Image (tube, rainbow, N blue to C red; front, side):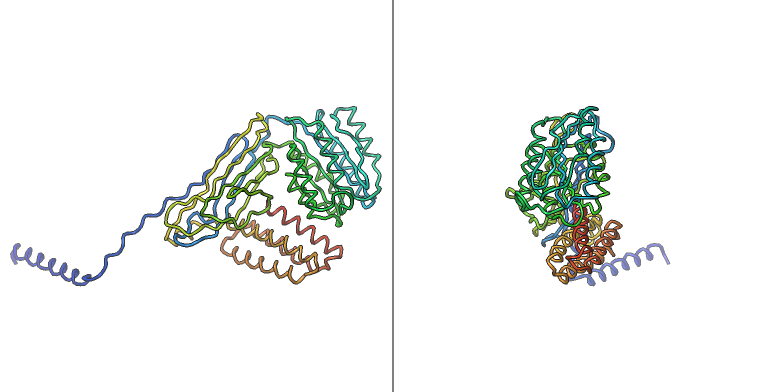
Length: 464
């Protein structure tokens, strides 16, 4: 067969195959071009020498064309290592000496107070206030040295129990005592100890929270320590929350000294004072929840006055937002600003960050990009919130409602963690299972009251 004939047959065959393909696809719409992936959202860490600010979103990619609920996790980190400067302390110690504190409680409170005074440095200041039905200034604000320390330790030994629980009077007097010697370059804190219900002076949560806020406006934080089973944990927590301090549940007074040591170690490791976190929400988002912190709103602006930030500490603020439906594009959710005073140079600092997501029609990309750690954190704070509500029902005697709420939220968390595989969430589930188990006791019994206080303390810590 000649070469020309072979070429002719090949050309005819090629033409026939082309015609066949053309007929096969005639009338069909060509496939649409693949849309390019939307740009990845950018949520960087912003930092300086003492503090960093980092925001994370549970859904970096959200579906275009429909609303989506997301969790936002805002982490504030105190940098590792010691500060160059140890600011002097200005402490007001407020000790409940009511009749219910008699015996072991008062003995351990006095021992903890002695340890605190012995651990503070020369040049620090301390005032000691005691209260029962009245308020006594046991030690007016004194600057510590060898001589004053001996006198203060002797005064602590002379504390005796008597009277009711004039908690508000003790708090007000401690604030006045610290304020009378207030200096800008100080770390000022009231430490309030009580084992009972406020029953004289201002006794309700709103009024006592107002006193704590007044202290913070003067640069004084308020930490509370509830001892035993008879104090009102909601009141003590509220005072600490509004006072930008910490709340401790102390089941056994023998633990007081260790808690004092922990609080003092935090104070001396402070890297940022008076931090304020401002979150400005975009018009396309709705706030569903902000967990664990008191905040004020001005339109779409949320303002959180936070406790001081310590070295090696992580403070975490978690929000739940609903993002409105929109097109396939990058979307801004919020702008965050952290303002604080740097301990090392006393200068005001600001860290700014933008929180973004990208909307897409690519469902696989949405699922692939989910932030498991943030979703697990969302489950943790939802468990904490449910525990607080359920334990309030339990206290009122509605045990069935309390247990039903806890079981329902636990079931949701267990189901979610089959996919998330979070060790932290697994530990939280175990803790909340113990809280649920503890509600088998009668609410008015000692075991029941311990369940309420222990469970709420767990929830308080979880939400931070």
